[in-house]
Length: 356
Image 1 (cartoon, rainbow, N blue to C red):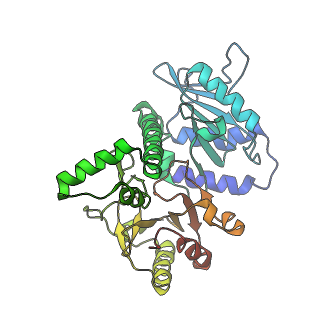
Image 2 (image 1 turned 45 degrees about the horizontal axis):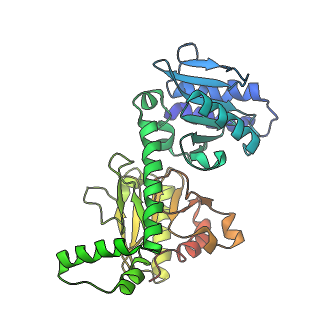
């Protein structure tokens, strides 16, 4: 898989400045990518090109497992921005009418995975996306492997995301405006636990300070919704392990510089390495205010702050992942390729929940 990805990334580099059409994009990039994930394009029981329904719509590829359609692929030319809402609506309607759970729209570089069961407008059904480059997240790519789809790993991930997201929204709504019966439940539990309780107004004020977060440390195998941030991981994960046991010198140096800059800003925190990222937990309020994932040549940082807190310039530098599946629990994502990028990133981190 690694060699196939490296080969594809080199091919993309050669083609990105050329005006190649959709057919060429499929032949040079899209088909080789899915073949590297185990999909057999020579097997008509597994991959059907341009399968049509009664309305005459034709997705570029339909992927089948055991006779059931699992994924529709809509291919676009390499330079297409994939932001045509009309096209997304049309293909999603096809998914819904044919009971296909997943739609992938791609230009051979950017892959956007939609889950048809998600609520909202079709463009809001985006489950996650990734871009084929040196910083690609192989954890996300592996969800599209034929064997992963056959084992329903992609479906379970999507369903868990759907459930957890809606539970999170519901709990946040309860915390913001708790009904009397909810306060009564808290009161009874407090009496049972500590022997006394507080008035309704005190409880309401306290609930305003809670931040509902989803623990994704085990990649949705064991998901927990927690009212406070996760406690330090008890497993034997190390900081060095995030950087291939310290062998990824470039990204490890960026991380160490990030930590030094945060310390110089007077931010007091602990580093909590887990399987998928290093959580930075504030000593002031015990909040996991950002999560750092080591990659070969860069680091990804998920920051717990709202998009509305950022300047227009800062919004251009990050990605809003509040409604997209990702490893961290922060709502915005920053990719840091060099130490020079850390200045603006630290300024954003300072706006996060690290503040008391």
